[in-house]
Every structure is written in structure tokens, then in C-alpha cells.
Length: 452
Image (cartoon, rainbow, N blue to C red; front, side):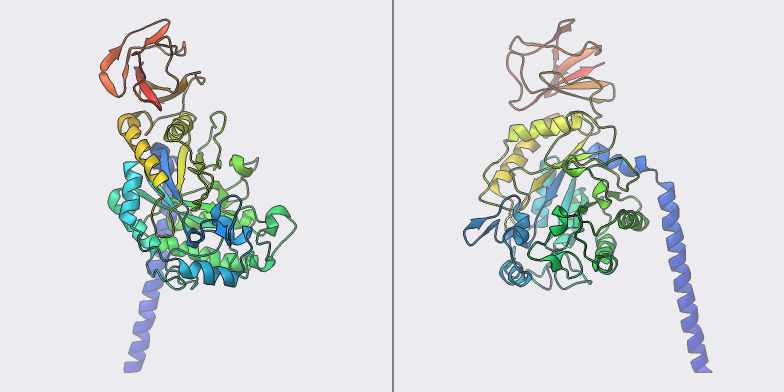
């Protein structure tokens, strides 16, 4: 009798658990249906400025092997300089021990720079994972000497600082035997020859790629954005992309997903081709669209020429250039995702720190003209850019007029004009334009606030 009672108790527990799971799934489905795309995208559209972090074991060689420097991004060194999987594990991953990594410092620098969200590479194309994955031992806890969950520490630091935590995840995996690795020594043969398929890829997708994305969505709190890459390989299909997109929203209904989850992206231009593709925003890479786009988009860009740490690449964009790029992007209705490639110890390169500081100083004064602003309703002026918000036009002056008069669009009906840096300094205006001080307020971009 006692045994029968125990069986009955177990059965009731299992039934109760199943009912709870079903209720949870129904609740999540209702939440997905209840949240409009505009509600889901609202914080991201207001944020304007985020930090991309390309970091992993590839920081150890820093783009160089046996005196040879790899072309392009240092994060591609496994492919570019022909590492075998065994060599990469023993020479690169086994030496990744970033003892100076401090998640709070990273997040603090992003916040001080005026960035509202951080996108960290959870796994790049080399397949090495920066979190404690239950799906594989090829991760920070099991295959490197570091033994700390980088994704966990960053997610906690972001939450404490009020920064949206987001992660990048590569569809490509050069390490996994069912992904692209069997094509060695050309790990990305399918990128150049779209007829090259890996028949094992669907197993990788189902039993490895999806479970890892589920882990990241389950164990690290609220995720602002899932940022995919590697959509170019022929093994990955649009059906997989749509399934992945729907799975993410079922798990976290407020999460935003980039368009690289599907197959619609039109190269580095980043926007979708004609067709029905999944994804919430376009992803122009290393470029800014010439004009505004009537869709959500985000331009991702490096400070030098490499996404990953590459000390040989000294072609750094100036702070002035980066500030102007930020303004240009916002004036066209986009977001700016600016990349950092930390070194193998876990430190930001000093050149990056300097530029983040300069951008933060500028945003401290002029952030009102960016956050929550909409694209310019007017044609681009010769001297700079416009943004708009709440009955105000912000004139971002790149080139200070030599005659001291800012010629503005004839459609702008000025009620009051002042310097954003000092709104007590009211500027006179007439039909010829707005009278400016003799010298620019800021060497990079000076902002004039025009009340309509």
C-alpha cells in the first residue's frame, strides 16, 4: 500500500510539473502576442549608442603567428593563418588567461562614454565559448586556465549599472565537427563557393547551436539584443533563421534580434533584400548609409581596422571622426555600435580608452541632441547634420562658418536659438541665418539648439 501511495505521489508531482510548464508556455505566448514591435524596440531606438566587444582566445596571438600578420580582422586568425584545431587549442586557447579582466571597469567605461548597451561576443567563428556551457567543454571554464564565466560577470555588471546586456553569437563554428571544420584548411569554403555544403550541419544546428542560444537566454538574465553573425554559409537556411528568431522571442519576448539571424542581409550594406526575412534591424558593417533608411538599422564599426585585438594595426580613427560618425548615424535614424578589441590580459587598448573618454566628454554636454532624437526631417546641410526631438531642431556644426552665419533650411521657422553647451547664450537670427560666436564651441561638433 505504501509503495502504491508513493507511485501516486510521484504521478501527481509529474502532472503538476507538466501543468506548470504548460501554463508558463501559455503565459509566454500571451506575452509575445501582447508586446508590439514598437514597445520592444523603444529602448533601442532611444539608446543610439552601444559598445561592441570582440574578445576571445584570438586576443592571445593578436593577429600574428610566427612573424606573419594576418590580413583583416585578428579574430579570423585561425582561418587566415591556417591553424589546425589541435594547434589552436594548444597554442591559443590554452594560453587565454585574462587575469586583469574586470567586468565593472568595462561597463563603467561604456557608461562614461555615453553608451547604453553592450554586445559581447559569446562565441566567435573559432567556436570558443566565453561562458560555462553545459553543451561543450570548449569553453572558458573547461579549456582555458581562467576558470571564470565572463558572460556571467558582464551580465551582472551591466544590470548593476543600468546598461542593457546583449550578446553576439556566431552561426559559424570552425571547431565543431558538424559545422565548418571538416572543410579544413579552408574553414570558410562555403563563403566563397556557395555550392559547398556540410551535410552534418543540421545536426549541429539542432543539437549545439540552438541549445547554446537557449543557455544564454536562460542563465544570464534579461537579454537586450541577440546579435547573430555567420549567416553567409550555405548550410544555414532561412527556415533555420525564422525558427531561431521565434524561439528567442518565445523565451524572452522583449529581446531584439538582428537581421543576420536569417538570410536576407545584402552584404556589408547590411539591409535586407526583397523578401520576407526575420530580424528586427539591419546591420551595415564598417559603413554608414548615404541617406536615411525607413527601417531600424545599426552601423557597427571598428576604431581601427580590426574587430579583435591587433597591436600591429595602428590606423586609429580620431575622436573627432568618431563623434561626427555618431552624429551622422543618428541624423539618419540609426544606432552606432562601436567596437573594442580587449587585449589578452583583459584590458582595453589605451587608444580605445582615450577615444571613449573623448566621446563621453562630448556626450556629457550634447547628449540631449542624440538620445531619443529622430532622424533629420531636412536635407543634409553643407556644414553638418540635423537631429530633431520634441519641437526642437539640433544643428550639429562640423564646419564652423567663416562668416559667422549658420545658414539653415528655409523650412525651419525659428522661435529661439541658443548654444546647447550654454543655453543662456541666446543667438540672434534673421532670414539670412543664425549669428554664431567667432569660434566653435567644440572642435569636433558644436550643437545649436533651435526651438521651433
